[in-house]
Length: 45
Image (cartoon, rainbow, N blue to C red; front, side, top):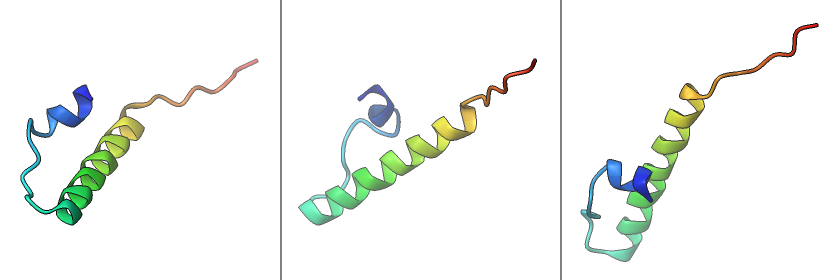
């Protein structure tokens, strides 16, 4: 929830379909940022 709120405290849309789309966009952005920030670990030896 903290991650969702970092993109804005409130949902801007009034209509349920648009609210759903807005949340999907926020979640997609969060997943992309997490993927960029996650280190890839390779085993050596």
